[in-house]
Image (cartoon, rainbow, N blue to C red; front, side, top):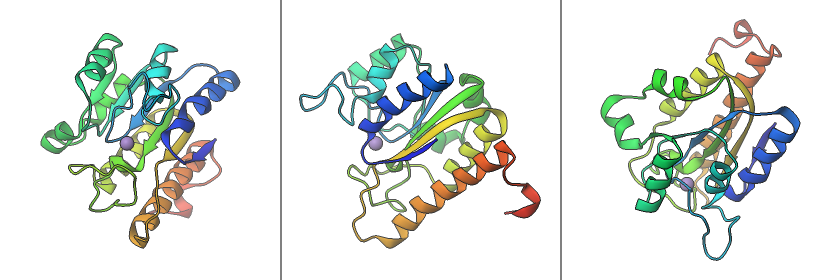
Length: 196
Ligand SMILES: [Mn+2]
């Protein structure tokens, strides 16, 4: 299933529903923020907390593109064995695809916050942060995951349209591309039909 947010609070119930229907999987979280706060502004179900809850529920977690994380979140991530691929590492070394793939299980749920992308190309988010990923880096990551793993579901969240037409088109194109990758994986589409 593909879900479109809305803020990141939708991910926790979506992941729970996927596990109920499909069994276990690991989580690939692509975001500028770790979203590991136990609560935010009085809510344990806030947009800043989904991965805190999911870690408590035992999901293996891989985070890519992170560039905002407090000390408590970092301690929690280390304690729980989160595989962390911060944006600065991606910029210095390139996308460590092999390492990311080996940190994920065979079955993967993808949750992508559009603010993982650099705000120069994705300004239409509530909490833009400089130093983000390029469109091509995100597409390369998705393509590698779809090539090597079974993707059981995905959500795309935090788009906040503000009149920046190019950003909204970028978001639509990324979702469209991901759905196409799922189509290839499932055999609904063939590479020959769309060589790009
Ligand atoms: Mn975010």
